[in-house]
Length: 237
Image (cartoon, rainbow, N blue to C red):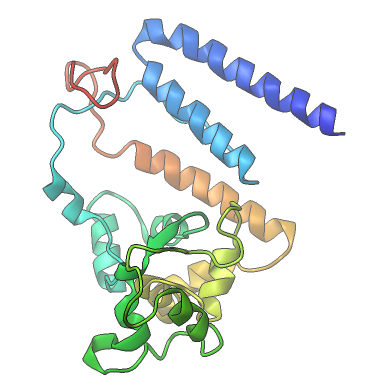
């Protein structure tokens, strides 16, 4: 069984990189390369891959100020909805894409929730009382390393799955924006769809996530003579 899986995996990679070789001649090298990486990430973390449309060109300018429109860890649901809508993304896309199923956050992004929420000198009451000591141990009030990384999807940070939504339902979301996702009825009803241990719930999340990622990849497309196709990812030609 293991040999069969390895053969299947190797076959997928061979196909991917054969396409990668030929796509270079069509000016789509880095887009297919990104698709290969997404395929690898999805498979290795237990999720699923999806087809990424090719042909998107790279921009000529990169500004830190552009990132100010990105959702932040303390944003209200109204702010999150507005930021997503400005990019043509729906509330459904918001709930799907902010599901931190993989990854970590530094203590400095949520430390106020643990000790001085909204200047109350007390923790955020939305945090599960059984979970709070765990976070406070990882991120102490004083003498701790604020750059320490904490799993955003507790007990499943290395798996691409739907457990994040169960965590926020139980008050075990790490970021303030996570808890707001469950406290607001507009987003809660969508998050509820992903909760459950059955295969159908996980399948629903995988499909919705793939659709939202493809939709996001089409935001502010540069085509034709706009931008460029880079040969070195971090350098303008």
